[in-house]
Length: 458
Image 1: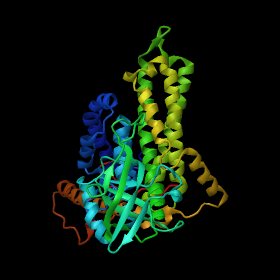
Image 2: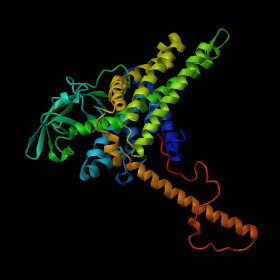
Image 3: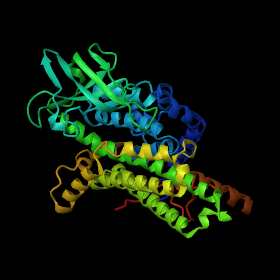
Image 4: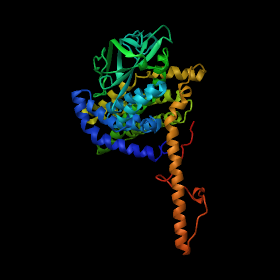
């Protein structure tokens, strides 16, 4: 993925992969057997600072942007879909404060998210309304300097792990009758309900939270009263879809890697099954899907980092990655045959986990519907354009870091050339003022040298 990533992204990939292999993989069998929420694993992931990957450095974050976020989630999900989901759900919780938090809220919460001290979530879906956000009935009633919150949210990612929840509730009628609030998990009137009993992503909590006369100060409201729909839609569009695409991409990568390994080692008719034409065709189709899915995910993340309007690309990334991961999981089942049903081969886990990535942030039919609106010119607000300065905030820092590294490299190379020249001629030379900043006409250094801003794509 050199077109979309540079040394910093690939160093991060190596770091996350090492963590996933050493810290996550040894837990997977137990996670599958016990199906308990992985509280400690969630904290370990948070302590790495990865939840703050899109948080600007001024707030203690990594300031590496959405491509880096995709790298982190993909690498965790490659080993465990649950671990990737833990990371993506908390990073989704970051979005609401970045996009709609007041200066005071950003100063208070973003450093805590970045350090791993506090895990955020976002809670929108209700049992009766489901994906129909405007159908929610949970309420927030103003009472002086406080709001009194009542309602039930479910399918909340990191429901039982999160420390502060971005909850959207009804404060009035219609589309401008929704508002968003930060609700701490230790606040009176807040409690968790069922952790969920999903068939996949074991170790991840995808359950319910309940608000019963829970009082929060007005200062906990995100944005203006009536902006709740904006908080919900923007977070889902700009973070939710690409995050889930990255989870699916990690699972998809594992499916292909494990199936290729199985086909190389499984001997039938006197030779490995990967030499059979029908098996090779399936492997080729799986590889093609994986390559296409990866391009869709990284292209969308890349555009988001650059502040480009890319709602359609984000929808397509979620659509392509979830559909293709499921298709490849079914192909893997066909290649493994009955062995695919055995837990030790991992394929049935990948299929279950990929299925759980399908509904959140809109099923494939929802993505197709929106893409149809894009095609016909009837799609509404472009959230990636509306919040472009905030989505590309971290990227500006990343580019600045790259430019600083480039200047340092040019200066260092100039000094090195002068040393070589002095040694060759046997005499001292005094560089004229400002010579170290002149652009070199030599071929620029490769990876590990200077880092240039990435080219725009699409």
